[in-house]
Length: 187
Image (cartoon, rainbow, N blue to C red):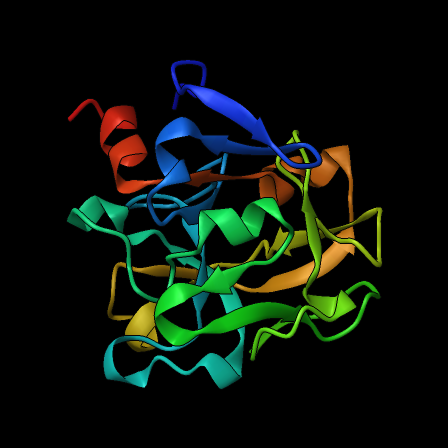
């Protein structure tokens, strides 16, 4: 995948976002597709279809943009992201760290601006809680398939880990609109 053709602009402290995303919802996807068989991995609410459950927190999951639009459980507000808040628009909840130590998971809760809901989306693509610089949101190494293994959708855990060059493929994210995705795929 070639990211050099994406037009980008700086927003806030190192946050990179496609110019088109200034007015459109975005998905937050890993730069490296890893073993993604459809469209790489995006931040996603656990559960699917009628079983989407914000109380279960976030995971890394197949991005839905290959279907022609962003999934409601993967669409974030880019203006709030520029200010450090990751709000899932359709569910009116924000990413909330359950702690700042290695292995902490990412919950979802009412957006209230507390320090566990504040993140730095750095220019290299790492996402770190502002209260834990040096720690990064990290997709897990192991992959499972949805619907008990019968779905082509792939799932990885999402935890906080020490930021590391050796884990960059699991820690470097970017925001893209549906238009960005279509452009990347040459549509």
